[in-house]
Image (cartoon, rainbow, N blue to C red; front, side):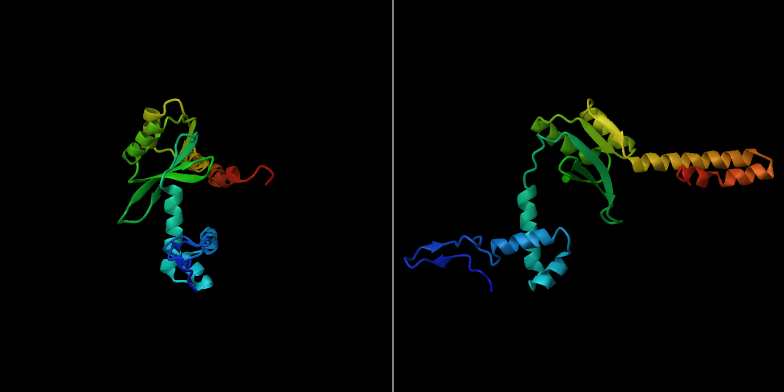
Length: 203
């Protein structure tokens, strides 16, 4: 059953039992279990498995997230990653900043580009942190923002976008060579060149 938030100790003094927080019907241990399960399961699955309402499970997880992320200290942040996330036609894009050492998202900004990072840089500077490195995609807007606010940080592009750009350039080069040559056998050889280049050496 639901744990009572307060009880009468016989002297008319209402006290909070140690196993539950005030004004809640979830014990501390059950709350910890819900938060742990939320890392691997949906809220609906947790509610069904524990026979709790979805709203109760959501309230526990939301309370924990508010506690953990109410104040995010930037002082010890040394390496960050910046990326964008598409949320659909209505909300469009959000910009995410992640602390590379703790793997925690430390900033979420509406939109994408330099404008979405403006408030992040303001807070970051106020913390007195010294940024050493930034990982990001090949967005010119993000690169300009980093250069303007953290000129001493090492700027690195993520491997996916570098490989994507290289593959696109290889395709362009292969098509160019195929258009230029008149020899049929050479055209056939060029046609299979991309797959040859993308295979591992031992294959």
